[in-house]
Image (cartoon, rainbow, N blue to C red; front, side, top):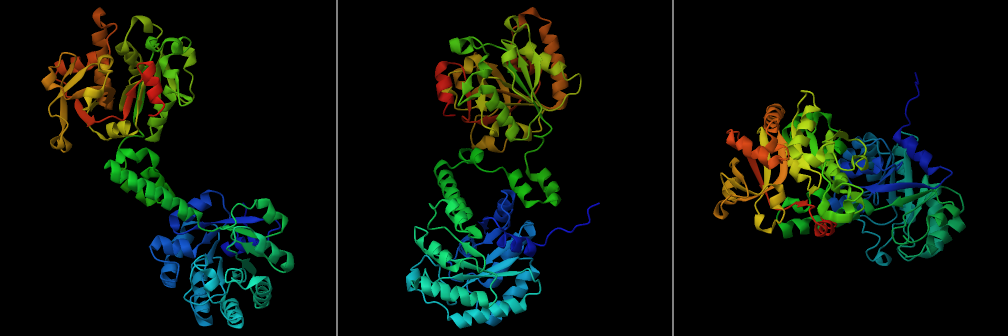
Length: 544
């Protein structure tokens, strides 16, 4: 058994600082972003003063107190195993404040702190930096010495940030101050510049040599090739605020979309699922909460995709492959269907093949072949699928191999406890594919506010529903509970004994269930699905 203890965070950071190769650390501003930075593979985190203050909604002028910063750091440290370098502004006061800061950082397992030689309260370097006064050099050296005297862990690092270029004092002053801070005990020098080119920091490094590690923050001179930093033997590069800026950009876009659309369907497929947030929180104790709040039963639900037909309406596109393998945005229709099921945790997917069955060969799927596809219909294919379970029935969603859909569809179906559930699109006037899918639906309630909190059931389905009774069009989705899957398998077998049902579809099954008094729950939606039933549909699917 390996008895070696893992490196402390302080030792990890010191090793990075003294590494013979150029190292990179990335900004984070709370526990969640720190975890994301760690998972991305960065060996260290920059706890940015700008980003931490911004996520609090205040300016980068010490408006967030140092104790509030400490509290935020504690969450970041607890969430990660890699070292954190704090952007400690000016040390939040004089030498006495600096010593207390060091003690509190060590208590929270923070590996290092960077302090800058300006006056407290500080102002962000990129806000009229040349008009900002610098701290007295000797006073700042005393602050570094006080910090080194206060630390109890010999590996804890203090980085001295030189603001001479920012404040317009030039190279000579930058070198003078860096040497003084080095002599006072600083473990590294961060040389800062607001130019769009790296001229100042390169001039500094040429004169400074390798007296101690030099850290840079290329926020302004971002177009400089990284090899330039390597060739000039810099020790560490800090990507200083990009996690926050990326988050702000996406949040602004999402907020505008929500305001404009007034529904969650417009953004749900573009944001991380709630389960990913739970995972990043690393919260095993939230299992009970997940049972309560996450979509119920999705992981234990299987899917049956009926894809045995050719799709002759697509002409040459299906000469050598069935419709389900026609490519949309570079991937087969079936691949998009599988992705939608996978997105809600459904992995057990059975596909019924028929025409050109060898062309249907996506990985990680179960296949059942309807070799008599040209003489039979959907009921026969579904019967083959259900019988392949050999009595081991489970909740199942049945859908077609040529219908694209938003992941919201299976997610909502999985949440409903009823034995038999279908989806109905209440915007039926715009649907042209209702005939193939089985016609119109009359329900116990139309899609309205009254239907939000009521259980709606199917009354009749087909092309003979009177126009004034039509509430929508069936979308081709049927969810069965485990008990219903067993019962309905028997119903299908009974129906197939009648030769007239040899080519029957799922709508015939729904009509038979209604005739037998079987309750069929209805969920309403508007759009968010597309039946590929023509060449025009293939074109439209490219924007689905």
